[in-house]
Length: 118
Image (cartoon, rainbow, N blue to C red):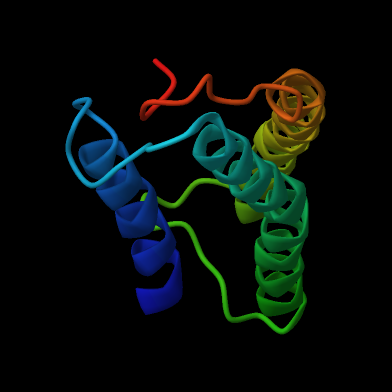
């Protein structure tokens, strides 16, 4: 799906942009705080995406439009998938909370003048 690919690519681009000091990346401590805020937002939105993927698969199963390419039980496969998605949701929620807490620290950091704070 192009939008999910774009989201993954956006994180890759962020990683690339912030890899080395002195490039067009973090200039002041507030930049780090802002990025952490956006990453926290991303993590907070992941559970909805996961739930919607599960919902689509459930509807497809009930409509008879889903099968397993190796002949395995599709219902059992979806049960396993749901367990994985539930775990991923918990991790996303924990990531969101950890990033929110990180911002409690970064929101108080300021430069000392003379350029970037490293």
